Structure formats: C-alpha cells, structure tokens
Image 1: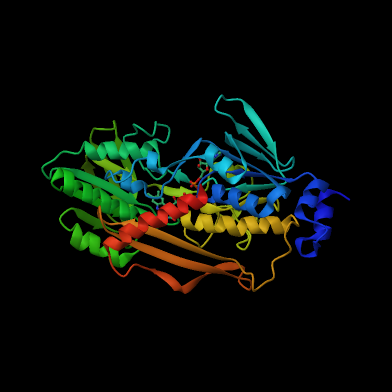
Image 2: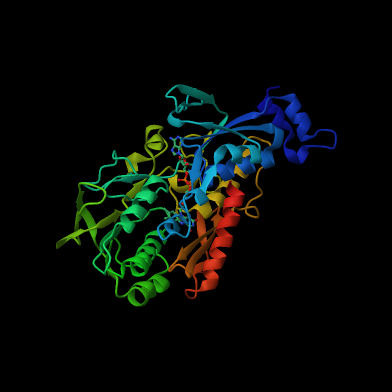
Amino acid sequence: MDRRSFVKSLGLGAVTATVTLGELKAAAAPFKIVVVGGGFGGASLAKYLKLWGQGNIQITLVDAVSGHVSCILSNLVLNDQKTLADLTFDLTKTAVKNHFAFKRGVVTRIDRTGKKIIAQAPDKTLFTLPYDKLILSPGISFIYPKGMDPKLPGATAPIPHAWKAGAQTTNLRAQLRALPSGGKAKAIMTIPKPPYRCPPGPYERACLIADYMRTHKNGGKLIVFDANPGILAEPVNFGKAFTQIYKDIIEYVPNQTVVSVAGAAQFSAKSITVSNGTASRTETCHLLNVIPNQIAPKLLFNSGLIDTVSGKQWAGVHMDTYQSLFDPDIYVIGDAHDSNQPKAGHIANSEAKVCADAVLRHLGVLPPRAMPDEAPVTNSACYSPITASTASFLTAGYRFDPALQAMVRIEASFGEAETITRDNYTNMLAWANNLFADAF
Ligand SMILES: Cc1cc2nc3c(=O)[nH]c(=O)nc-3n(C[C@H](O)[C@H](O)[C@H](O)COP(=O)(O)OP(=O)(O)OC[C@H]3O[C@@H](n4cnc5c(N)ncnc54)[C@H](O)[C@@H]3O)c2cc1C
C-alpha cells in the first residue's frame, strides 16, 4: 500500500489508540509541501500546516527576499512613527521558530506535470523543489500607467508607488522630506480602481502625507485623484479627515483615471494628466505618488492558473479550500486569488488557516470537513492612522455558503469605526503586533 492510500485508509477519525500520527510518519515519508511567498499568507500557512500536520508534513517556504517587509503600518514610516527595520521579518528565524525550512529564491516556473517548482537563487543558480502540494501566496503585480518605468530602481524612481513596502517606501519618505517649506509644497497621489490591496490604504496614506506636510512644511497642497466615484472604504471617517481635519491641505477629486505621468529624477518636478472621461486635467508637482492598478503576478498567468479566456486577472480557486480551479495540487491564498474578500494581510492570515486545514484533509491526514457545520469563516481588519496619534478601522467577517460556493459577508460584522480616536491608534499597534507574532 503506498503512502497516500495508507494515510487515506486510516483517516484521523479512524486512528485508534494503537495507531498514532507518529506511526503514520514512520510508515511513510512525509508529504512534500512547497509554499511560495513568505508574506502574511505564506508564512502563516507554513506555520499552521506544520503545527496541525506534524510529522506527516515537510514544508519548504521559498521567497525572493530573506526578510519580508510588512506593508501593514508602512504608511507610518512616512511620518517617522515606524522604521522599515521595525516592519522587517527575517524569514530564516520565522522558519526556525515554526519548524519548517526556508530557501531564498525567485520562483520562475511551475512544472505542473513534473510537480516541481524552478527557482533562481541569489547567486543566479537554478534549483528545483518537488511537491505533493504547492501553495502560492505571491501577492500582487502592477499595471503601470504611461510614463511610469517599472525597471527603475525602487529607491530612486522619480514616481514611487510604495505599494510594496521596502525601497519604494524609503524613496517616498525622502521625497516627502525634500518638499519645500512655508506652505509652498505641492504633492499629488492617485488611487486605483478595485480590486487593489488594502481598500482603506490609499486614503490612510493621503492623511499621513497631509499630516506630515502640516507638521513639517507649514502645510501646502495635496491633490488626491481617485479613479473611483467616491471614497471606497471608511467613507465617514475619511470624509471627515478630508473635509475637516485636512481641509486646508487636501483637495479630493473623484472619477479621475491616470492618462500619463512624467518625471525625470527623484527630486525634480513631476507632472500628471488625468481624465474623467470627458475632460482631462494636467498638474505639475514636487512629489507624485501613483498607486497603479493591480493584477496577479505573471507566474500565475504563465502557469495556467488564471481564466484569461474570461478576462480574469486573478487566480481562480474554490473559496472553501483555496484549491486552484485548474490544478488540484495547487492552492492560491492572499492577494493573488480572485475573491470578493478584501486583499489584505489580516484576511490572508485567516485564509492561510482555512487552506492549511483543507490541504491536510485533501491529503487524508485529517478527515473530510462536515458541512455545513464546519463551513470556513474568515475575518479582516484594517486599522487606518488618520493623524500621528489617532486612527479609524474597518472590519468584516465572511462565511462560506455551500449553496453559492462563495464566501458571503456576515453583515453584522461589517463596518468602520464609529469615529476617529486615540484609543483606535493604541489598539492598532496592539492588533498589528499580534498579527505579526502570529504570522512571523
Ligand atoms: C500601505 C499599506 C497598508 C496596508 N495596511 C493593511 C492593514 O491595515 N490591514 C491589512 O490586513 N492589510 C493591509 N495591507 C495589505 C497587506 O499588506 C497585503 O494584503 C498582504 O501583504 C497580502 O499578503 P500576501 O501573502 O498575499 O502577499 P505579500 O504579503 O505581498 O507577500 C508576498 C511574498 O511573496 C514573495 N514573492 C512574490 N513572488 C515571488 C516569486 N516568484 N518567488 C519567490 N517569492 C515571491 C514576495 O517577496 C513577498 O515576500 C496594507 C497594504 C499597504 C500597501
């Protein structure tokens, strides 16, 4: 009897006092699991899969970088409340703490027939890793507007997005510092169409840029061009921030799509043209922060995990397991899959636990889920700093509906903070520390 049949024939429910998980392991080599991406989704998945799968599971996490930089709280780097070092998590240490292996490399190809990934190590050599199950949590890619060059180094690009935390965040911070004082500074930022990661994030960023301009530059002007018809997340609290707290700094302009941008160097003038479909508007400024439209990483397109025939831009998955619609041995969690759940780190951590549980059930290490009682539930939270000492938040819960085969929002669980408070700011730091500790 091979390992799979052996484990399946027993199932955890049928394990008697004389047949333990340890004996299962002794009877067969552990299942090989490869996880790509050590962010909130991938790192959490690796931890819980190992915790719940124990000796039956051998996990290797692969990431392009040795330290994952959290986007969560990264807007606070702009006004000096956090440093990038505070938000960087050493994946080697995470792997030791949570008992899995970590290998640094950029995954360039998935060989679905041979069931292996091909990756490039930092020294440019290629390595392969075979898998029984592959879990992908690679985050997002961008669709850049005309004039924004993705090949420029993030640390010095004239027009940073800073929507992947790291060099781009430091660049945006440096440009903020270089703004002229005396209320003469002019900054512009843009907000993309959904789906994009962290629905409240761009509005939060506008508040923190305005806060910095008020505190360090005697004010100035920040134009926020939003591709959407209105504020998409926390409309009450961000509405209040834009029209009351920062009314002398922020000009919020909805329905504006970016047509093109230009900027020759990091600290020289930039320009942008936007359009509302009937009229266009061109502005020049000292600082231009464009958050581009978002799309799943190329690896997922190249691996046939996205229904491009139907025009999809994100990986198709079964929403109760995150198993790919196109390959039963591949799962996609976090920002990269097609979902009505928000693209956010908190919910990626929640999805990771649902997916880890599903993988163990599919491998026969755990018994099948009893539906509908064991229908998966996820939840999301985004805290939004509004000033250097106050914050708002947005939260939502979702439950899988077997009839609809979809995650359905639990209405009673959805909503933004009643108001902007100092307590929310304190709670934000506690919430983030808990999430960081759970994931890394
Ligand atoms: C400014 C800002 C504020 C935010 N605030 C919040 C918040 O308050 N709450 C919240 O819940 N969410 C927030 N988010 C969103 C959150 O950061 C993302 O949704 C979350 O990081 C998604 O997790 P992930 O695992 O899908 O991807 P990521 O965290 O992006 O991780 C992807 C990992 O995969 C690696 N990778 C990618 N491709 C490859 C490859 N080919 N080979 C090897 N490795 C690869 C990357 O190096 C990276 O480490 C915020 C985002 C931003 C930008």
